[in-house]
Length: 233
Ligand SMILES: [Zn+2]
Image (cartoon, rainbow, N blue to C red; front, side, top):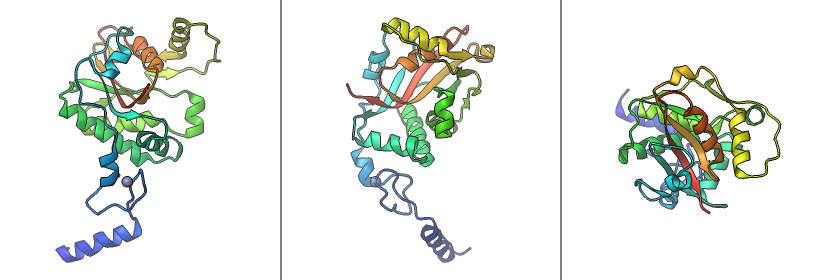
């Protein structure tokens, strides 16, 4: 194909499948992917990774992690929330892919170790999975793993059982209940591995804490946490 005919072909594709910004839906320039320049400029990025950053502080003393990092700051009505609802409630998986790639880019930029790690999305309970049809964290995690060229942990290793919600008096009891809800299968397959736990938004961190504590029962397992956003408190 000559360069002019390939340019025509490209324009035709743009005509048939116009690519629009996942946040504001403005049409994208041919060389842009997923998100427009205006929205990129408005992204509420968390400060660059440092040891003891606010995500690490939020999880400090709750379980041992190698590192914990969140890319964006999440606020009600903010751009990060818009991005999340595109992914979670409008089935916009391109948004999840974009987020996963950004996380991978940031991990490389901050030299967070991942070379021998397995990526594991925080599981979604079956009720939500059936309602939504997919686990948004898994879409993010898969794109991240692909970009980093590392493997995903088998999705059946950590599952959420369909347990009735129990009333819990305090934080300890709620954590205990949540840990009971996770079911670890074939834990021996992750022995000695570093697991990078991936989630969309870190709020209280209770789910991640329960997940991590169940994983850390496996001999030699180490955990790192990467989330797309951290809720501002
Ligand atoms: Zn935009």
